Length: 217
Image (cartoon, rainbow, N blue to C red; front, top):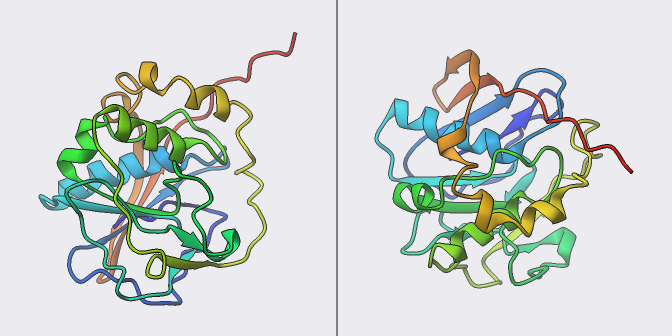
């Protein structure tokens, strides 16, 4: 299970995590650059495979708590979206293509979509890009019953290094072009610190910085 975080995020577990086997990996973004959730998840995937030959990967935001222990964290024949009914959305799916919060893919499914995009710096967009990658590769998203896939979000202010990405809407429209060259096959990072504990593995990584924003004409 992967939970990405930065130095401004606190890893909190105040509820049950419905996973029976496996391990918890927390890729931590080093430094003060803009947060990049999807790139950290790619790193978690590769680093976990150095630890063991896992075949199922669960990707979760740090601030989401599952409310129903029947929402079991394991992989399915199709990519799985677990967090379909969050309290911040009134316990409803916000839109049909939503894939945010908590998801699960097998190793084969993850590699088929070339992992997640590395070029979404800041908040928003990467989940929609991932959904596009799934459907463009002939797969469908599976979901639990809406009464089971309920989550509450730990309330917090938006981190100062996780502002909305102004380029996200343009990037989402170009997934078909970018997904073959932006993902696991283009991932670059440096491990700064590695610590393995009884309950989880913390991996502090340096992931670079976002490209300069284009000048406004």
